[in-house]
Length: 130
Image: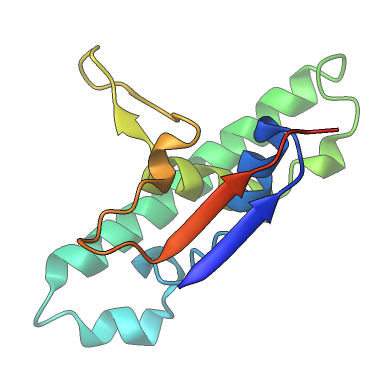
């Protein structure tokens, strides 16, 4: 059981929580050798990871091209790293909710923190920001 007390603005706390998320459990981060071991048993897992990697690669290249075309919007292109892009996309993949518009998802701050287990394992208390 974990207990957290935050003395920050709610928006800041949510971002801190996102940045503390360990996403290495996702097949996206598994080494190729581990994914190959799944070939006979769980081909959909390997295929999904490979598809995600290709999609993130392709989209990152497009993002870099867009940033290069709009230096007025992105004055420091070095901030938009591959690592940051992977993190942002995978946070969205793992924390977004389906929206009422077909094929649309959105992040809903705080809603993704609801525990899905039958028993709670963490307590979070917000203290007014000063």
